[in-house]
Amino acid sequence: MEVLLGEKLDMDVAKGVHFQNVWNFYPNLSDTGEYRFDTTSTLSVRLNSRLSLNTGLTDLYLTNPIPGSKSNDVTLITGVAYTF
Image (cartoon, rainbow, N blue to C red; front, top):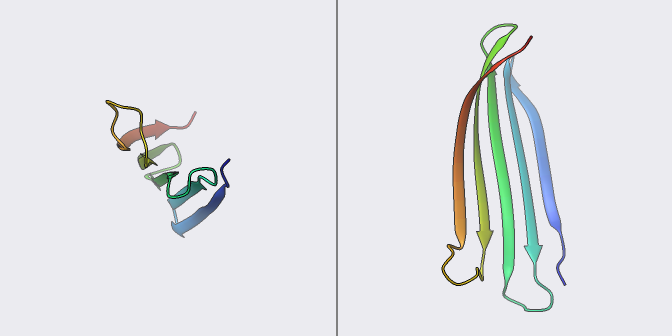
């Protein structure tokens, strides 16, 4: 059995700059001391009315992964967005 704790932050840092963060924490109630969490942060910068630059960071963590797997997985994503 697990419990879900989390937060979500969604804000405009400046005109044309948007930041979003989502964090979830799952402590294991059946096996105390074990937990997992995931967090995702994204930043979007609008260059003009149609074009924006985006970047994101995702971190997934598990205290007790299956054998042969890593306990932490971090991903960095970047991109360009075009609005029609």
